[in-house]
Length: 178
Image (cartoon, rainbow, N blue to C red):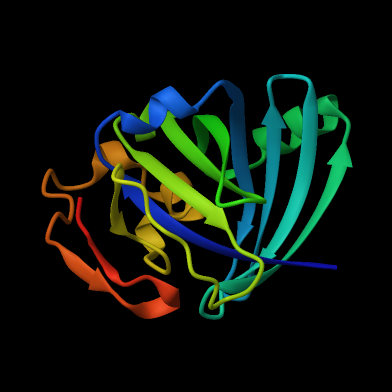
């Protein structure tokens, strides 16, 4: 059993691109989006597929169970999804020792949205934020993939949140903005 502890941020500028050497193209869809858990199917680079069950977050932590499945079964499950298919290119690069930044550049109906995630070892782990990190969106439902499947970014009002917030929660003591 695995618990995911992650933080999410909007990305500003392209300063992160010089750090990103490899990427994975991802298509994912949601089979259920309940109050307690979601069930997702994901195909990565058209060569691997997973079925994932995630509980709703409690603060930064949530249960995540993931299983490898055949691609043909994943394609069949995507056909019976709820909402849209979420398409993105995920860039990964190391930081802070054994941690890894993941930057998701969305396409399709979520074109224009770029989100960075970092998975932590514990909920109060301190991280230094690079200059290309913007507004923290951890815990904000519209920025999670399940929500994006139901209400894609292209349908949002044009005024995406851009006011600076000071984030002392979760071990960060600097100002982040969009």
